[in-house]
Length: 202
Image (cartoon, rainbow, N blue to C red; front, side, top):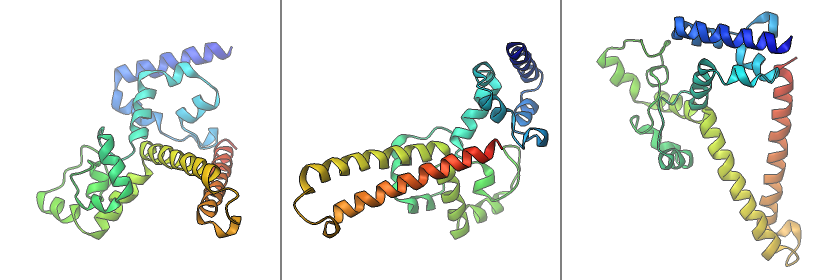
C-alpha cells in the first residue's frame, strides 16, 4: 500500500510540474497544518520516500534551499574569504543575492524596483546587515563553514596530542583550553540539532 501511495504522489507532482512549474514549486513549500505544519519535502523525508525526493520539482526546491538567498553558484574562494571577512559584503556585487535581500523588499524575481531605489537600498549599514544575515543563513555556507572548522579542530587536536600533552598543566595551556572549548561547542551544536529535528515532527 505504501508503494502505491508513493507512486501516486510521484506521478501527481510530476504532472503538476509539467502543467505549471511555478505553481508546483510554490505548492512544494506550503506548510500543511494537518501534517504538523510540515511541507511536502518534510513529509517525504520523514517517510523515507527517495522516489519523491528524486523528482525534478523536489530537486529544484532542494537546490534553491541549498543556495539560500544567494542567487547563483559562486566560486569557492569567494565564499571562503567572505566567510572569514564578512566586511567584504560591503561590496554588493561580490556575492549575488536575490532582490529580496539586495533591496529589502517583498517578492522574488518579478519585482520591479526603480534605479534610484536600487542605488539607495543597495548601500548602507542596513543593506550590509541584510547581506551578512542572508549569506550565513545559506545551508551551503553553513556546510562549508562547518567543514572548515571541523578540519581546524582535527588539526588542533593532533597538535595538542603530539606536542602539548604532558608538558604543562592542562589549565595553564591555552591550546588545550581552546580544544576543550571547541569540544563543548560541538556537543552543544549536536544537542541543538537533535532537539530541532525532534520538534519538527512532533
